[in-house]
Image 1 (cartoon, rainbow, N blue to C red):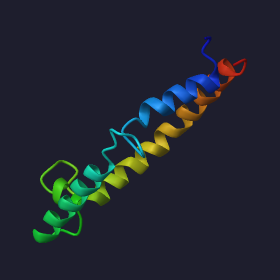
Image 2: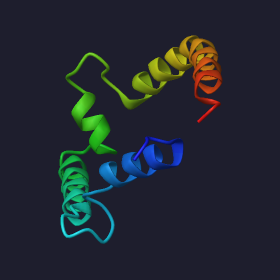
Image 3: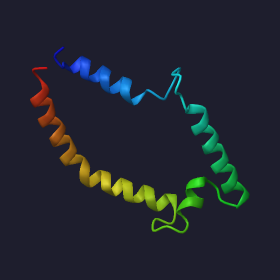
Image 4: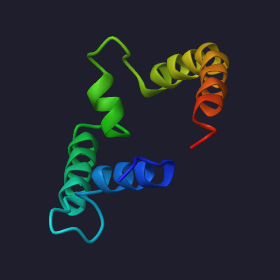
Length: 95
């Protein structure tokens, strides 16, 4: 079977959702429980969120600094990413 865009998309989607939804291998409940426990620990220790707790001793220090960095990175990287996206679209157009 030749790899067409719809087939490639289905392959990608199926592969990356194999542990989600109604799958026998779904780990959504585990992930949600971990998030709940992390938030509970942060609250018990007096932090507003798990992110604030986890970042306090790291270089980023606060969630606000992380968001500021990510927004700055986005503004610098997005123009090049859009240019590359257009190149990919031109390359994949026949498919």
